[in-house]
Image (cartoon, one colour):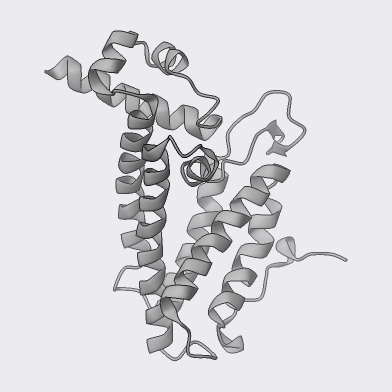
Length: 225
């Protein structure tokens, strides 16, 4: 039982690593088994298909992410702090998850890298209709994130931080799609600059945050015409 649990754990960890580094379609069962150091028989003992592994990996990833989001929206902090915590979390997580990439022009601290984005959501938007488990993973992850966005916007509204009365569920969905779109754009350009310069301003505009609560971008993030 201990070996079986360890094998499943290794497969999940390997799937997470490979999906962040590449994409769902580009990662095959053979590569997963090779990187995990397990046989294909062991793989199919735990998962019927690659999509089943992907779904299990997404659930594990969400459980880890949920703990971080709970901390970001801690009742110890104000709604404005929740917003700024979220912005900083997204920026810092992308810096952390951006991975070394061979033969790339983009660099981070002088080393080649590629922007991670969010491959779980991206994969769900790209796969065919037959990959129901992959689309289910993306849908569930989106729904979970949107619930946190609802709490964020509701708190800001209750504190009188917004210039208008929003349709909270709609704004929560728009926040999610804006963030995912920005991550995809940054991944396409292989640059973190757009995330650092556009994320805060985009969220301020979406939620219609009052001017007195908006932070002025730092000089290093200011866009020079």
